[in-house]
Length: 464
Image (cartoon, rainbow, N blue to C red; front, side, top):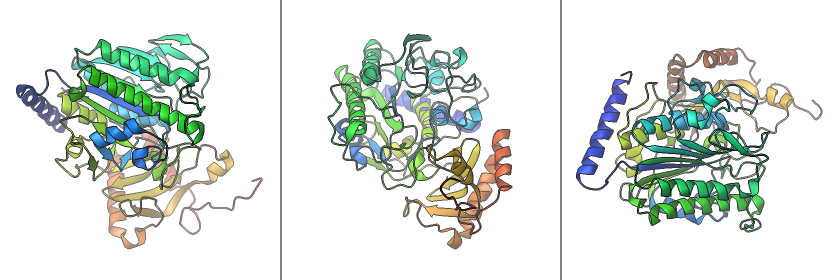
């Protein structure tokens, strides 16, 4: 009821696949789902992505499953990205364009169906551990959004008041961040142990490695790359504890585990060889590690040839579990065939890069088109930041297969591709909230850089 024809067919196919799987005796119950999300982790911060930080558990997970070299958060900032992960829809659709603050009365719209809502309706036990950041009013907290229970910090660890919650109650303030990864891990493992006989969904959203950085005494000073390295190594240890708990309980072969991050690194951490950081719609601000593991279902050592996004998790999980899709139309697509190697890519609309309400870029296939630039690291002074808010007279087109660093615009040689992506963007805008369309029109009326290359319209000198 209210599900699109495409959504109905996906759900039906997922249910049929699950029935066949059960018929073959490969699974006694629907698969368990575990999503582990880092906070501000860079594309280049894991060993399996080229870092010198030691991450043996995530490296092993990547070797035992599928690793994406092209995977995107749903936004270059926190709240909007988490909204996208949990709903399969751009954050702007659910009233989450940017980042929430503790004093905000708003949250992820109650009209949105979350991944937890969907799985709970399918008989799953659900638990959220860690950072929430989608609203602090009672109707927006995890326990009102499909999760049976919650343990964590309801927003960023640098926002005040610093509180740790159990359910809807504050149990600690200020929070001892030195032990938070250890405590999150204990809660996650305990949930797995308590629900080993029922299908479960664990959403484990780490505080690490968001600033202020903190590590336990067991990990502080362990990494030669400083406290940031310590924090990432402790998070990797936590992933290992979750994987070990699944193996010890005999749940390994019936559990789908995914790992990623909400956006790129802040002023520490590595975006690898990508351009940009957190808060920017260059690749470094939004491209993330993504590893998925499901022994016996996902081939070991698989490397996905195309790209995926956090928006794709909900429809992928729906197909795998046979759950009915939410009534709201989704922006994500089912990428299970890419994970298993059944397909090199999947059909999808253009993937849109938002910063707040502003639509800045779109990716279609291998091509990424920059149409405006409201970019700037979070630590850029406001006056300078304002001067970076531009409409690009000549849109910049990058071939992300050959130029992932977005160094050489190919727009001049590919006018047809620019026009095609632009037309698809204009079509998608018709279904976006009023604030998005209004921001788009405002952008079209902004001044452009004199040379049309997206540089500042006036020189920026010290003191300006």
